Length: 173
Image (cartoon, rainbow, N blue to C red):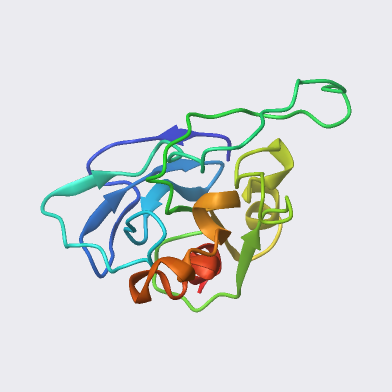
């Protein structure tokens, strides 16, 4: 069924930090830009504070700032999307057949880019819609810190930065 639905009764779920509202599309429930952690520059991610009310989860979150934004080309074969960048990029997206509490396999998608570039929304093909729609599976894609923000070793500057060179991997863990 090809329908779009966004209202006070559709696609609202309770997370450990608070409620989020996504939307329904083609029989799926879709949630975008859900924050999963917070992090100060060059430090390990920390748990989020709980929020009150219902957080909107209908838009992708920020992507990690890139050192170089490539010039779009070859868009017919491999279309790219460029999205607003910010260091506050620890967010994820979820496509699920339903929010009924049923146990389903989860496909966790980590984008490519050699830990230097990329994002969970860089290519249209990264969306979990097709996998979710044609299989009874939940798809989760994630943004995390990249390049110098996630992998710059500053341990020579003190114990505070002991694991700074692995902050991006800590985001994924």
